[in-house]
Length: 330
Ligand code: DGY
Image (tube, rainbow, N blue to C red; front, side, top):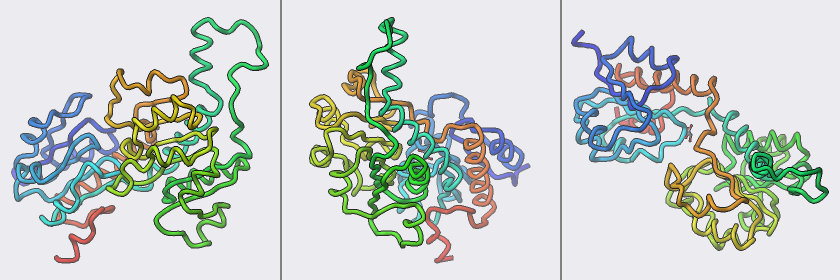
């Protein structure tokens, strides 16, 4: 038994992945619904061969120092990895794995659902019924914009952005996109998507859906300045990372009718405190970072995170490494 790799799994994940880890490793699994507090996380990482982390667990130099020189892999149970200091892992030759691909469609489903819900005011409608305000059919009750035939601006045209475009096509939407580079026509044309500069996307879109990674360049991309370039009828949908939106600026823009509404799956911080002014606005819909939360998808993410973890502790190449450059120097 002494040769079973020692691993820490920072939360209970679906059995599709967890069972494989438990079979192959001497595993400690954090049992609570809430993430391990920092000191517990650091203690748990000590002496591990591998760790399976979530987006709530910060992996930085301090963490890597505490884990020690035996750490062979960090497997993140997410496609995003902004909780991990990738250069710090790479410097130490530690591969980091993520879960790309398997959550693309599920995340785009939620982004589209948020767009629909904000446009057609579903949370407000539900509150209206439950609050006893529904007295009759009203010609002017809870009016909103059409989704079909409107213009969708997609910021970040990777896997999830493109999946959003596929959905929008079915609704007859005009699709604009912006990314750091214009994609080849072989990608954008079948999706009916047109590359435009960011300011043009802001100015022309009825709905703006964010699908960028969180980087120093995208932090507070949606600023007072950006919001000021949008239509007064625009809706902003964020399923990327909370800090991509400057929430103070968003609050002011929604309060002052600079834009019409917003729908957020991600916030800064998470969880969003109940005192956050955005929660006082009817035109802001917030859900608790659930874009990938379908049973099948969370199962596939668990399988993939387990596969990365097990490959790493065995010294094999990870199926989906974020920093493949660690293999180049070997
Ligand atoms: C991710 O994977 O990065 C999502 O935010 C959570 O599934």
